[in-house]
View (cartoon, rainbow, N blue to C red):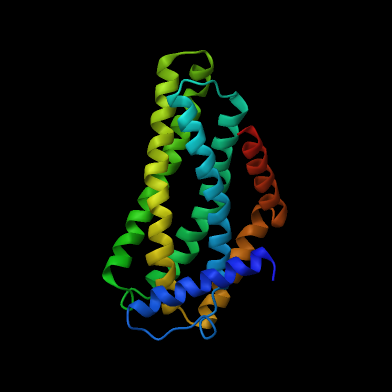
Length: 217
């Protein structure tokens, strides 16, 4: 079994345990996971960028120099991949389908969806704020460095717990509540959305961008 397949089996085991804690007898064999596999694959790539941002933060705190391409690439990734590709799937497809089951969802999950959407907006705002101060940072101003440091800290403080909430609360609710037909439709909608944006090639481009960033550190 390859590493990728093993990760998917581990995910399914995790969701089985989470959903069954609520007293619902559930197995991934009777509840397909494939739409969530798509989102979790994207989470894995974004998590790699979280690790890069942590290293950027540490270097900024130590007043070490960071090259301009690192910041441009981080902003491009957050805007283009995390926001447009990933958050759009969640907001326009996943959350919309879940809201059709509002009477079946635990109240805290419904509340959390509203919080997650607000955090998507905040994350994009922070990327734009970072972009605004890149040139000032590379002119050597303390204000530029401090503004970028503030942005990356706030981004991590919002988005790392954000992913935890999605993976431990919202995604398991989706797996348990939606029918196989609804999951089929969701996966088709995800694929259609990706095709509009450039299909597999756009995902490969962002994966390559992440690899380039990782080589910087």
